[in-house]
Image 1 (cartoon, rainbow, N blue to C red):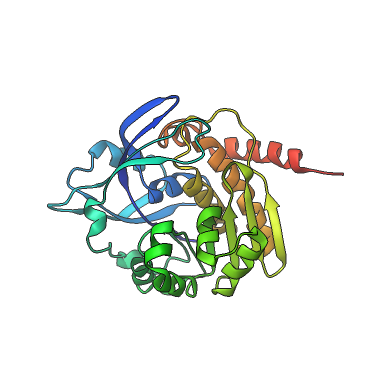
Image 2 (cartoon, one colour):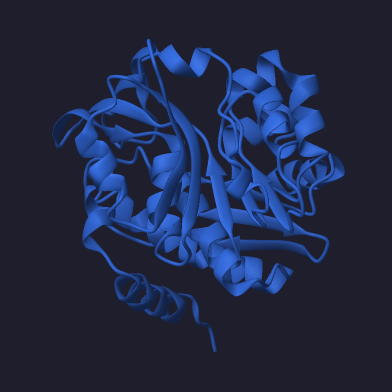
Length: 301
C-alpha cells in the first residue's frame, strides 16, 4: 500500500554526553521516513527553505522516499532545533527553536499523492493535519501524533483531528495531559473515546501500550546499552510501525501489535548514533534479525 508522511524537516544541533552533532538532518518526517522505508516506500510531504543543503536531499534519496511533495519555499529558511540531553537522556532540553518555514502555511499534497492509502500525520498544528487529510481521497489507515503545545493551546482543534483519524501515537506525558487521567489504561481508553480505533502510548525506555477494542497490550522497549542520541526514537518507532502495516495491508489488532514490535526495533537502532546515521547503515535483514531476538526474549512457555 502507498504510505504518506507529513511533518517537519529540519536542521538540528544536538548535544548529548557522547558529543555534539552540528547542523544535521532532522525532523519528524525524516526520522519516520527512514524507518518506514525498511518496509515500504514513502511519499514525503513537507516544506523547507532555500538554505536546505543539497547534501540532505542526496541523503534522503538513498532510500525509497518520493520527494515530489518536498517544497522548497523561496525567501524562507528551514526549521531549526537546538537541544541537549544530560544524565539518563530521558528528555531533551530545547535550547533554541527557529520555526522559520513551519510558521508559514502548510505544504500542498501533490496530485499524484492524493490516492495515498496509509497516512501518518506527524506532530504539527492540528488545523494543518486536518487540511492535509482534506487533500486526500480513499485513505484506508490514518494515524496522527501531537505534542504538549497543541494540547495546551489548541485542544478543540486537536480533538477534531482525533475524531478524523483511525489511530493515534502519543507519548505518556502528553497522553496524560490530554486526557487528564493518570493510569495509562484509563488514559488509553479515553483516547479511544475521542474517535480513533487504536491508541499507542509511548513510554520511552519502558516500551509502549497498545489499546484497541480487544483491550490493552504491552510491548517493552528493546534492551540496549548503546544510547547516543534519543532524538529520533519516537518518530522512528512510528515509521517502523506504519511501514510494516503499509507493507502487510493488515490493520487487525494482532498485526498492529506485530507492527509495534518492528517500530520498537527501529527505535532501538536510531538511538545508537546521531541524526539518521545509524539508519543509513542498516537493512531490512538487520531489523528482522533483531525482531527475532526480541521475540525470543518475550517468549514465555
